[in-house]
Length: 101
Image 1: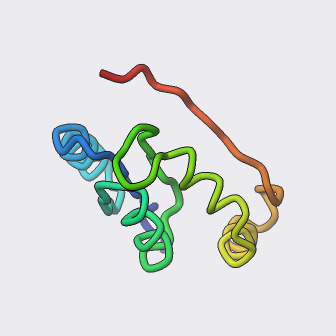
Image 2: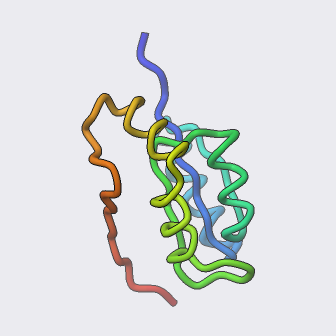
């Protein structure tokens, strides 16, 4: 039994969130949404996403700040490492810069 992968979309621009939600849901992903960095940190704990699509420039907390917090959170890193069976090294960060508006 294959479980559907979970993606957390984090962006303060609602149109971007809705676009990615529609596209990714149609592709079979389970999608959760957050509109700022603080909300993202809450959703990460309860939703445990396989991937976080994170905007950089947002109110309350930027994407860079969210990344730094998650990268330095031993509980989060341990969970990620366990779930990925050692495929992600502790402290490793993957960035993909997408041109914005």
